[in-house]
Image (cartoon, one colour):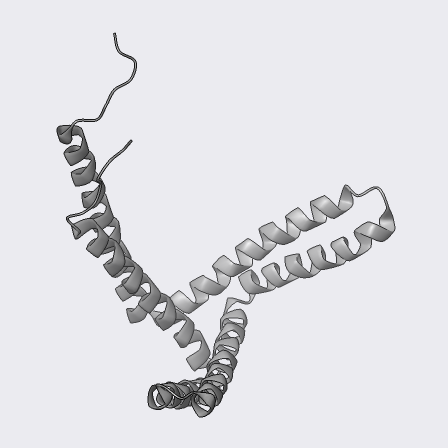
Length: 188
């Protein structure tokens, strides 16, 4: 009996069909989750803050466990400090999810303003596409300022809306990959 099995065209077609169907199903699920996140941006923003908190709690606990295994106290002191700060930030995000989401929204607003300033600087120094760079820069600054002026509520809502947009784009990408005729060419 031959231990080596070469895939046949039938094998490849069934793998391709199953895989592309799964891609389309996962993609459709992500699109639906993205729409839900955009329809409920407040709940989505709070969920992001809680999820971030859980991640920080796990990371802080791991840092503390690692620090407490160190043989020398001097080397472990900064590790204990950073582990404790990370753990405390995680607990804050979980127990004060509204404040954490608002803070994340403020960071997004600051990022948009900074990004807009750098885009305007790039447009000023660039020889090509200056109109597009400048337009995008001004739009980014305006969006950042709108988030800032409406803070804290707009910050929390922005996190939920941005999550929704991200999920929709990821879902559409998976659906398009699943619908692509050129899926699997060889398994060798």
